[in-house]
Structure formats: C-alpha cells, structure tokens
Length: 534
Figure 1 (cartoon, rainbow, N blue to C red):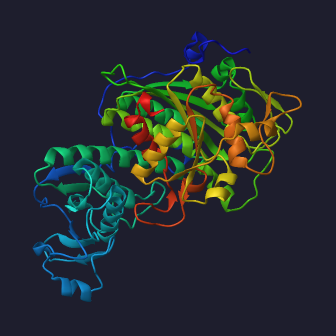
Figure 2 (figure 1 turned 60 degrees about the vertical axis):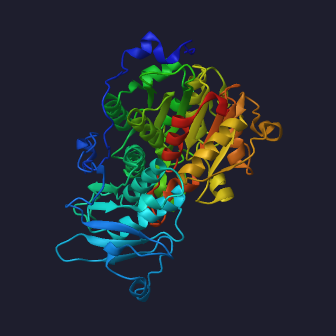
C-alpha cells in the first residue's frame, strides 16, 4: 500500500498503538527477574537491584567497605592506619588503579585506592572507582571520597565515581539459580563543602549507570526470552514509569506505513516485527531546545537469513544484534530523571532475521517507507534495511538532528577493532558533538569518511533505486552511504558499534558480555546538544 503522509499518527495505525505519558521519577531498571521459560516470560523489570546513592560527611554505619584515595606521594590518610612503608611492603605504591584492602574486625574494611599524582580526569576517576568496586567485591554497601581527587568539577567527578562502581559490579545473573557475586546496594559519597554539586553528580551517575545496565541486560538476554514483542512490552512499561509517550506498531500497521525494509527482514521469522516510537518532551522547553531523533537497530537474533552465517562464535552472540535498539530504549529511560532540555524521539526497529520458506530472498526488491526501492543482494545485510524505514520516518518530522546506532558491519570491526565504534555523518558539527560525548564518557569513536562522491555508485542497482550491499571493500562506509539516502539534508550521524558491542573479559568498569556502549554517549549528547552544535 502507498505510504501515508503522516505515518506515526495516521488513524489506521493508531488502533493497536499504545501511548503513555505519566510523569514519574525514573527507576533503576534491570531484567533480573526474567523467567527461565519463554512461555512465562515477564517483561516487568525487577526493583531488587535498586541502588541507594547518598552524599554525606561521614561513612554510614552500614558501609561494608570505605575507599580512601592514596597518591604516589604525599601523606597517607591517617584513618587507613598504615604508613607508606607498610603499604609499599605490601606492593601498593599509590599508582592509578592499584588497591589494597585492610580488613577490620567489627568495622568496615578500608580500601586504599591508588590515584597516582592526583587531579584525575573523569575517565581516570571512573577507572579508579571500578578498581575500588572490584576490590570490595564482597561488600554491598560502599563509601568513598574518591571524587575529591578530581581535576574537574565536583559534579562530573561524582557522576564518574558512581558510574565506575555500578558498572564494574554489573553481572547478568537472571538465568542463574545462584550467584557468587554481591550486588551493590548502596553508595555513599563523602563530601566536604561541595555537597550540592556532588549530589547533582551522584544523581546523574546513578541514572546513566542504570541506563547502561539496562542496555547490557537487554543485549545479554537470550533471544527466545526477549523477542520483538517483548521488548515492545517493556518499552510500554518504561514509558509509563518515566513519562514517555510510547506507540507500538505491528505487522498490519507496518504494512500501512509502507515499512518494507522491516517487514522484508521479518518475512522468515515466526515472531512478528515491532516498530516502537518513544517520545520525550521536557516539561518546560526553552525556545532554543533542539529536537533530536534516535533510530536503533533491533534485530533480536540475526541468523543471516538465507545468507546464513557460519555456526561460529560470532553467530553465538547475534542475540546482541539488537544492541542499538536496546541502547536507545535505555537512553530514553533516563531522560526524565536527568531533566533533559531537548525534545527526543526514538524509533526501535525490532525483528528477527531468520531463514524459512517465507524468508526474504536474494534478488527480492523491497519498498522502504517513502517509496525508495532496494534490491537485496545479501540477506545478512539486513540492519540497514530496518534502519532505512526508521530513518525515513524520523526525517518526516524534520528534527534538528538524527542519529542512528547499530551493530551494523563486520567491516567496521576489521577497520577499528573492538575498542572503537565507527562514526560517519553528513554534518561535521554533529559528528564533532558525538566525538565530544565519546571523550566525556570514555566510549571512544573514530570518524570514517562518508565519501558519497566515491562510494555511492557502488550501490547502483539494475532493477531498483539501490542495492543493499556495495561490494567486498569499504563495507562500513558503503553501509553508511546507503543509510544517508534516507535522511535528506537533515544533519545525521551513524554509529556502528559492532566492534565494542561486547567485552571479552572484565576490564575496569567494562564487564564481560554485552557492553551497553553507546548508551552513556548518547545520553551525554542529547542532554547537552544545542542547535549551534551542528
């Protein structure tokens, strides 16, 4: 059917959509109570992992461990009860990230935290806080004055310390019968005269860390437990709890919208596709507030379709191919608590990519929302097809900026490895704003050239407007060039997080498994973005 003029709000699509708008405080959300049997799966997030963050002048009596910053030079805190020679004899020199635990009978353990020469950046503080959290791994209630070692603002320092502690102690244990780890239940930041600033930072750190943990939970959840239908149900619940507008579109509505990319990828799956639109509006928007649209790839499991992936380690982690959509949902869950000044709309493009008798075939031509036709030459290049519909929908609202995020190409992993996400875009100001947010959150990105003048011709098709792959080389770039066709002249950037979508081992605040990388970056971007940034 032909596309409608106003796709999200057409009357036909409304019949099965859900809208919520209650104004409530943002909760700490996880999927810790996911059921073991998919038939009894309950998308309701658990509140058992809620972390109490307080700012106080002295450690609470309930604290199990107290972290004390110790530099390479200067005085050792008297409360530690050890001098520098004794610490050195134990192998502790005060170097950044070193820790030494001093147990005490009937009292909180003391943990010396190395801060090097002091004046730490927010990234260094986050790493030091993570080292403290791991050293105090048997204790749920922690207290520290680590944020006082910062070179920057007290608020930024407090946020980094809370993030480092919470993220380092994250574990996905929803499907384990028992756990050998102790979750963090409370964090006390010991403040002096800057209590108000530390409280602001602690609130921010708690919200951003909770969002990142939600993103990790979603990506770690097995695909039979978290389908497109179930992530849509969770989005509705989060929307009701955090004051977001939520609209959910199923196959009939997607057909009316002309979303041939999402429906084409979904054709081989027994699970129906879902498009979820979330909307955040600030309570008192300023005239200078920007409208930012986020689009997330939500391929809940990517088998490759007819272009079947080999049965190797990468196939195993394709439950994480929905990380883009999971990250965007997590970002949206935090905006009310953070008082985001900008209007943010989000599109979660959710489906499986499965092989079957009804699956999308090589040579098929799909009609993307808005009318662009795409010849499919590889069914494993499916992410760009679902994103195309989302980008086209987002562009119709003429936002000030559009950012999509996706585990999109193996080519980006080959180019940049697993530590850097790729970023490409049609507007250098927007790309620079993303690079700044990446630096602030220690979620690094590297800009690749869009180079449409050199690469667009590789996407020419003999039978359609485009083909979905551009040859064996420069795959991360040709994928971005493909996406750029659906945003027009609106400032747009693409984040390819295929490399850092997961961590292979624990390292500082990075825990083994799904990374949630991109969540804190996008939160930083949308809460600080101004039209003049682009």
